[in-house]
Image 1: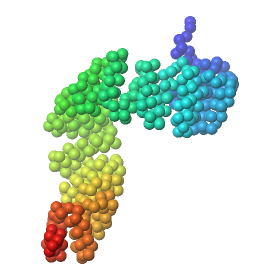
Image 2 (image 1 turned 120 degrees about the horizontal axis):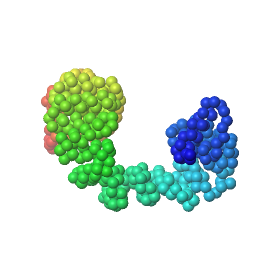
Image 3 (image 1 turned 180 degrees about the vertical axis):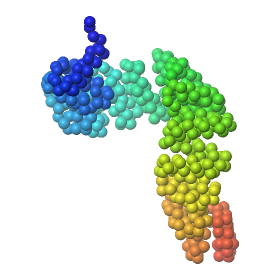
Length: 466
């Protein structure tokens, strides 16, 4: 009885692995070796692929295809010069093999010589019968060059040859999005759907385009068609849930997100969104339940910890909020969003030393917003750390030059330290920048504000003729 191709491949593979275990030597034809190597490469078993290539070439030393596998493995290991030398030898023997040009393009691409890689692929396109693969490679090379129009063109051509190449479809939409052509993307997808009306991926992408254009009713219809085309398509249910949230249809959004929990392992995104919906519906108990499930599912998802912390902060339960943000920081101490919340919560609890640490960490991690500098400064004033407060303001001025709020604070600090000339300099600067912020000195340094020296400068600024 004749074996099917799959049975034949499995038999060859089993026989090859048996040979390796027993150290026997079995003969395989070159096609069998190619299938074995291809299987190992597809499954990421590079060492076995190399072993099969070596044995294959020992039995079939003139096989171009086996030598090409050897080239591919040299490229994979970044031994580009060795791969190129072997390829040049093959070009002398066989110039019409498209795989030679594809591998040459691969080497050129690895060296960031994308324009030359494109030339090689254009030659390969003339020889190949599998146009889709080469067109896809051309699309990728133009993508590397950020030539999105040409990239889009080749991916569209690729999809014409293989309408199930969804990676090409995703890349086409990526190009449309980068070129800021959402309407053109929708038009293209609708044309594609006229020929492939049950393509769930295309419906999904149409929905995303409508969502980005805030056309939520159309987006909803598109996601519904994606689900009709494939009722196990998790992405469509998630996107549908997002649209329903925008439409404030929270029970329906919960229903859509919940479907995904039964189709596969729960995703932290779905759990978080269900929690958000319950909170919008005023069901605090279920909201917290899902927020907790979210962080249990993915402790590294900062949005989960932030959702719980913000929930307790909104409800003025600052101790609970602090408990959860502490847990979050223990998991990821480099997250600036955690430190900002840690600082704000401690400030609300009048735990000023801890609040100052939080703001300092936020600044160290790159959060250089003006409000962060100013709040830290005001906390340092409350702690009596006047030198640290001054240093903090000078650092803030590097990021926010000519800022009246900084200048008024510097003026107050220098006057307080009896450095009147510096205080006067910064006060005059501040008044020139924005007189309305004078209230800063009045609130933070009341005794200095009422002093004669400061009042004279203010009066003179308001009425220069005095």
